[in-house]
Image (tube, rainbow, N blue to C red):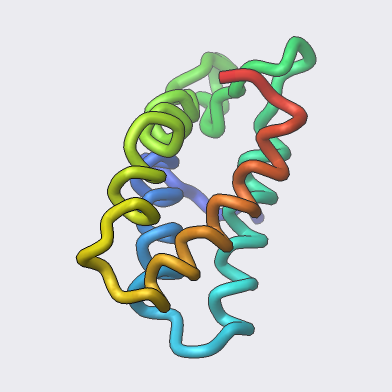
Length: 111
């Protein structure tokens, strides 16, 4: 049985946010980031673009792509989570760790 996620961009955003704000151990944080990177890596098209995560079972049509989440990461994450000096150092360190996980999987894709 496959888990159902109707809004993959919101799900990925929540996983990322949870890893930055709610994970209480390095193990929890690493597991959340591995989940995030795994989903991104498995949803890459042959030509390197982000694939849809959800398909209509009956029509097999694409319902939602990963572009909104990827665009948020590329356009605002670094500035809001890493460059913002008002955030505590630990939060910024965790954001850098998240960026590394996402950047590593991003090396195989183009957004």
